[in-house]
Amino acid sequence: MKKELHIFFTCLMFYTRIPCPKNISHNPEYLNKATRYFPLIGWIVGSISFIAFYLFSLFLSTEIAVILAIITSILTTGAFHEDGFADVCDGFGGGWTKEKILMIMKDSAIGAYGAIGLVLLFLLKFKLLSESILLFTNHKLFIFLLFISAHSLSRLAAISIIFTHEYSRDDATSKSKPIAKNHSWKEVFGSFFFGLLPLILISCFEYKILFALIPVFLTRYFLARYFQKWIDGYTGDCLGATQQVCEVVYYLSLLFIWKFI
Image (spheres, rainbow, N blue to C red):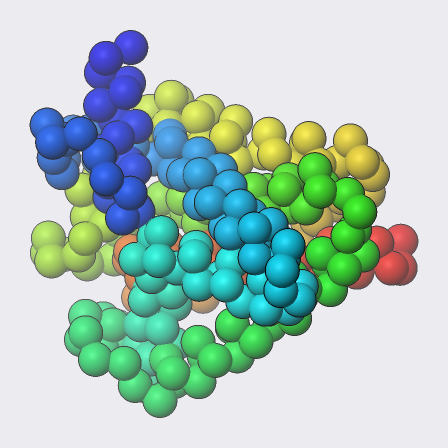
């Protein structure tokens, strides 16, 4: 149990800005095993984001509360995944070879593709999340599960790429390198358990919500295929981009399912 707690806190420290015990470090062995808890981090980030939304919605409009909830989630993770999304936009938008794409993504400066991509991403996330919440204004538990399932499922889609694809870079310069070396059944089982459980719970309101798995994992499939085509695998930035895109696709899928199915 003590070792599992250490692995969990390693995961929490790596993916968020939440304070952890002082004895926790970026131990490569624990980082490798921490993938099993990555979707669980989505529970935490989603819960914090929902609490922010709920508190602000008590005296502000739903739209402003949603914006502040999104800001809260960004502050909680230190824009970890948004940064990856921007780097992927810049890299694949401006690079035409594997070497050029990887070089651009490694650059800490944000370019036009990254800036435009983030603006469009946040606009979509704000609008889709706002509309989803307005449909269920009187069902706080549903909204709570909406936040958690969006963050956990999108993280599952992202981390599952390391189970099926190879790491692209040949050096150890990337922050995701320690978690990309190997994995066991515990990492696979843990990821899918924590990633799917919130979706199963929210589907108790309406079983059709389970259909959201299809577009989310189709998106994951085509993104992984695209990364494989251009850079022969994935990087940490690719995982961050996958998480962000799949989160938006999840919101879009729920709206589509609720209105048309």
